Length: 334
Ligand SMILES: [Zn+2]
Image: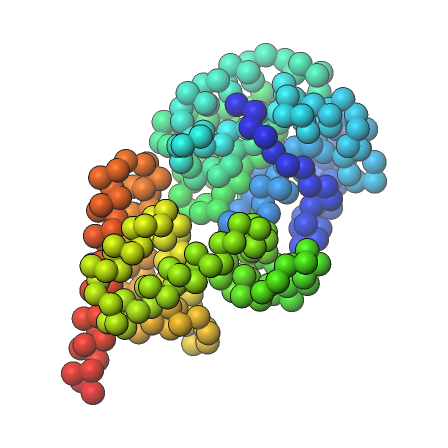
């Protein structure tokens, strides 16, 4: 259950005040037994959670930071700390399963092996399936001594309300554009503004995209969908072309673009990404309905079976057809 994690301390600059608040709660012994960090994917919430875990398990923190060389820190970095339990989707699965929670419950029943706290990290918390979520609820209701739960959610609305209500919720803001850009430039990232725009302002995701050359994939998908929405290629061809990519990536991008198109519609914001402009021809209420469809399809893809891939591709074609019909209706109206 102990997957490899990378440790970041101190955490990203945009989390500075949250970090300070956390450290103060720890030092004054007022830390809630369960935290829920909520923020969009790609701003580094998991890294913040991991840094918190390390701080809680460090034996000799210095200047509001974990020391990096005590036994606790060493075991954590090696991925072998017996009192640090991570619940993350297991390989090839997109969900956190009940078996993982049962294993956790068994570990929590024993005293901490290193004699201090136990820390449980759940990320992303919305990926717990229903059985897992219900099973972990018991642990949250009757917290074992000296155990701290840190949950991370990118879509907190998908976390069971009963779980949310038993945690202290921290809404992590998306960093300011200028701060994010400055940070990316400091990492020697080229096309930083394009990357930041493509990732919806999430700098950590932008850096990953830069390292994995994901921007090219993004540009391809955006261009294909744009051409489909304008009727330059048929919905069938859009489906065929996009099915060549990981459909979770495709739907993830579509979700992001729909959210931006809704902002264009509702807040009269400008968006310079052509695919967003093409999506924004629908009124917000209909964009929300497409968004629902996309979220539903993503949930099915996360559950992960092959026939869903075919359905998902068809869904893409239907979505494109819907936009084309709207475009045609507008042209008729002149
Ligand atoms: Zn340490």
